Length: 136
Image (cartoon, one colour):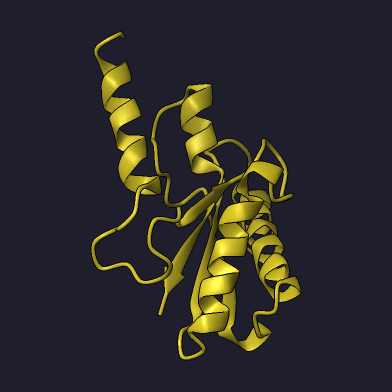
């Protein structure tokens, strides 16, 4: 229904906008990278986000990071847990290549258990295929 579209669109902004209340990490940088369907390759459009986090981590050596991998609701539980982990590990590997020590970054997967958007549209599925950066 048309009235739902503005609500869905407005739900995207808090996820990608900075600063997020209580969140640590670089300011004015998204704390989420998104993935294509059935993929765990960091998209070229999101590489600058990963690079910004790597720069911030290198200049804040006391901080650590948990990368939370997520999938959309389609597919089996085991498959999605594995895919979410591959997504988190892909971001972790990118950070390591950019000079972040492996011991400071943990990769975890929630599969399809924590959907950002419970909808079934293509846009909802896209919002769910993500890795979230959580600083400790």
